[in-house]
Image (cartoon, rainbow, N blue to C red; front, side, top):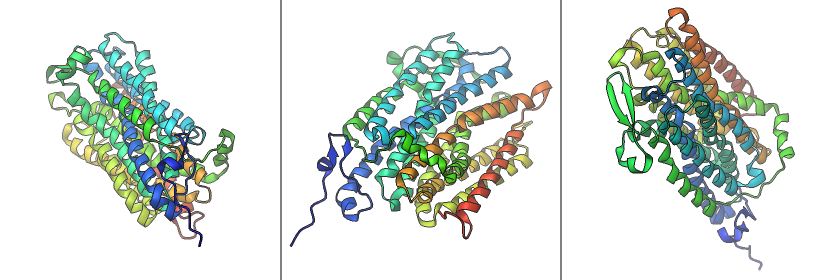
Length: 472
């Protein structure tokens, strides 16, 4: 009686230490004996690397609120200086979105091992550059802009991580695996905003990282080491880059660049893009703009003005946690209904902000409500981030490679959120405060609510209602 050959182990499944020679995650025998071990190991390493990607991507959002305090001034008029700082915070989003377009196509070309390792190590360049810039008085604005664009590498490689993870896991685990990776990866935003105010005050690294700067605040002066905020990533990036090279393998699904362009012929690629801009575009956009938004709206009320970084990290923390938790929920309920609820919730938050006056404050009385409403926005965007990434592989279930590419592409476009939100909010605040007017972000949030309504309508018609074209 013939016996079925044993499933290959890690070494037998790998070819030349890079591409796996066999990958059948939907096969229960293969998954149990070999696939599960490789997939979860890959998820662990790539998720750690993704945390560092998001942390470095949002590094300037945490540092920008302190640059003026140490004497970095890009314009004489404080209003103009704030506008330039918003543009500086926006640049990693612009670069991240553009680089995500490139990363969308890289996994089928070069494989997980090479792409993740190289992209991890490349982030050493902007981290070292930012440290040098803040230690060098008189560093011009254009150098900060170049470094901000280079920080976009931390946002760009997300569109390699998601397609990679999608290929490693069977459909029944994709909502969970993608939710874990993207959600924990998103913690990187909170990490940099939480660690930065602590680590810049740590003199223990001074022997290795250089001398302090004097930070002037409404309550006095203190010595800080802003370079610490960038330099503490350097050893972490080196270590995880080396481990990824040694431990990662690549799924043998290859396609030329031309072949991968077929996703743009399907209208659902564009509909998925719209819904993900609503969810992750909002999460990343508000995460980048939140510290400067607090500073601009509520930072002019004297010594009692809130410290932006004492609150800003809470939003990404909530959104990231929700994304992890609701990945499991989406596997049980389906993604479309959760996306619908998330969009409706985000519209409700915008309406509440408009009617309560928190976007054009004349005192600190409305600040607590403003923070709670912003945290609500992060909550609903986190739910939507989890649910949409459950939807997309199902919407393209007929072609797993296309589904993986769509994850990358939608992530690419949504990664422009930090650029669009920071730039638009900065311009809105500048426009409304002309001629002595009260700063207001209301026009931006009205526009956001209109877009959310459009995205919710698309999700309902094509993916959520009874008899829809591609239920997910």
